[in-house]
Image (tube, rainbow, N blue to C red):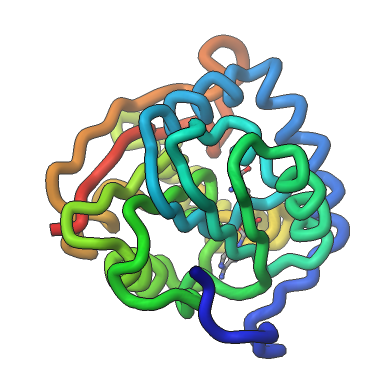
Length: 222
Ligand SMILES: C[S@@+](CC[C@H](N)C(=O)[O-])C[C@H]1O[C@@H](n2cnc3c(N)ncnc32)[C@H](O)[C@@H]1O
């Protein structure tokens, strides 16, 4: 399924501290903040060849349904990629983890039936290029599944905080993450259609963080 070989040097991102922090945080959030259940919903019913961008430590892998024939997971960060390789070994479906970047996918055009983005559009240097790549590698009618966080649309003061954080410390502290992006708007602007989604607060109860405003949904490549 994958084409191409070694990772070009400029595509690699080396974030050992973030990788360690994210591994702990994501494992805890799966259980305590209900993220695991959202991941199940994200992947339910998928089939065929799937591309997942930025899988991190691979927490989605154990949740792919048996109808998926293969997942290609493109992860640029070497420490997270190592954990993803380990997670892939225990996955119920074949998962190949490769180095690379979402804005230059090592795949032929129209080679995938589905694409998965989870908590990743916030961290990409070029979201528009990555979505254009996902559109390229999806077959016509192929499905994009997304679970992302973004702008707190109905909370003005939180939106202001998010924008300030994104211009200052947040991306530096959290591996390039931004809190005020508009994943659904970006997916629509990339030409995906039939967008359907629901909004979620994560965690559902308790403290509200700048990164709490999630969307979970799907769209189609026309
Ligand atoms: C917040 S983590 C999310 C990990 C995982 N998707 C999840 O659901 O837990 C963001 C991920 O995006 C990856 N990432 C950053 N830049 C990327 C790029 N250009 N292409 C693909 N993935 C990238 C990071 O290395 C990291 O694994």
